[in-house]
Image (tube, rainbow, N blue to C red; front, side, top):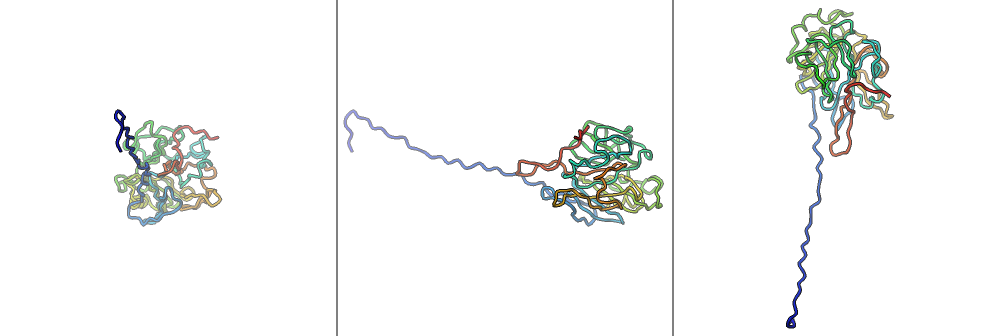
Length: 305
């Protein structure tokens, strides 16, 4: 078609449609499953967290053993109501508000009149921590270790709990020379092979517990079989040695199941005169979800409402 003189032709600009691909968010992968080592035939027990087992049980050399992963659990040193004296937060039992996250609990060490060294818990100490003592240590982020105080672990703001007891039972992945000297490990009511317990850590930081009617050397060998590279004896004799696992029932009430020791399932849920170690689910982010499981570490004075 022709256009009259002087007239202009207007063209509409072409329209370009741009399609922006939708933004996608990929959830971080779940942490790689952690598993115990050593020569023990482990089997899972109790609850799971983030799809992973948080407690394994096994046996070796006449000892019952337990293993818990370092990234999913955190211990709490709980002084007894009577020994070393108080009052202390939690009153010698697992605080009811922490029980939904309770995985396991086991006995502490010797009475405080029967060993050199001290304890640090809930921001308070009983006696000075002594160099050269085997020590179960908890840090502010919830991680933990077993080592010789002054060599493997030193005082510092990140140390929030310590339970000392005797000397090292396992060191460098092998029983110590002292493990063969039965007189160095307390007076027993049943001879050298009395009920004894021990706690250690493996090369990846996993918690290894062992208990049985054993000599100190046999107990040390059981820890090594469980993968422990460092370990310490805790308490001895039938009235004190105990390990319980815990999980909530269908009614939501947390109950215990004895793994080792003659005491009942409610031990550590009611007041204990002696100290013990409670192991809770460690605070962890749930991959791909705006939430977390577990509790923040107990790292100083605690207000119990």
